[in-house]
Amino acid sequence: QVQLVESGGGLVQAGGSLRLSCTASGSIADIKSIHWYRQAPGRSREWVALTPNRGNSQYLNAVRGRFTISRDTANNKVFLQMDSLRPEDTGTYYCYYTDGVDHWGPGTQVVVST
Image (cartoon, rainbow, N blue to C red; front, top):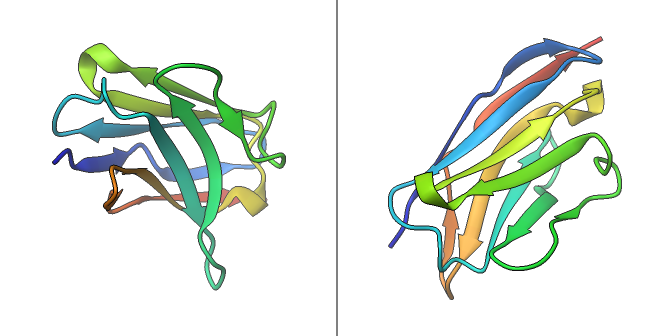
């Protein structure tokens, strides 16, 4: 099974940008959808975006136009480019897929300061 590891989190001021990476341990070519989720402190995990292996990416309304998800199949990576960051984007970001079994990465923390 393919395992996922996120990276690229950090501390950024409001209005800034970060690029998160999700690196897979094997091929992602056959994974139908790879998702980004986030979890703010004290809140439940929230879906953010998905990249399908065919078709259009989809986004949470709150991030549409600010975040861009992309898939680099050749290098088994998925990215989340986050621009115009807001304090409410603070949280731990996870990549995820399912093949009947849920596969989560350990997460990467994003803190957006005012």
